[in-house]
Image (tube, rainbow, N blue to C red; front, side, top):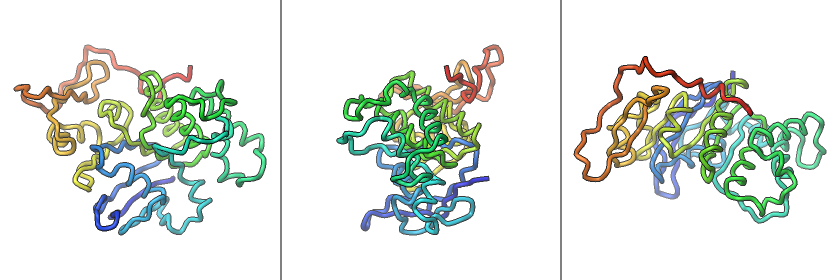
Length: 288
């Protein structure tokens, strides 16, 4: 069973400390959501977990093996990373870019096998891009671009998937669609999925566990109910909120307070809404 683990992971840019002794364990089949204010180090942590950045201290392990011992190709077979930003000036088509996800398996210059092509097509369909395969990437909208980069990561077919703000630039339909598909893949394929999000309520709905970064450290990691408390959110984001139970599915629901609102922020009510039908688990959302 594949696991991803960081041990006392620290990272600095020159003399500026960004991450300080981050220890986390992510298990196969779960979605871990990284949360934190802008500049908290979420992207730096993701890049350190896949060796795009070298930590100044500590280490990262995949299945109890330090990732510094992996070859570049073997690491790419184990970890797929979806970045926030990439150069968009290219004459490649959507199909070309998504097919690059198979490079760790086929090499850069070998033709794709029938299995490779099937994986690429599945990735295009999963991200709603099957009808855009021949479009040049310079013609894509911001949301289409994000879905293409996600499709490439899915085509890599690695047991660990790191996604940096996969819903940025997507409309509401595709935000939910992408997160539901990613969660389902984690369950069906027993993948480790680590994703950064800004929307705390999306994190509560789709994350098995949440990891909250602030002050260069991991200040909380656990279920949504354990992490999304007014006091922790105040510490991480410097904003007052109240946290209630979602009226449909019962997950914690974060409501920001207006400046000057005298209402006291409260912890989630432990009472269940027994008279309200619950939604199906997001892992069961249909492909249709």
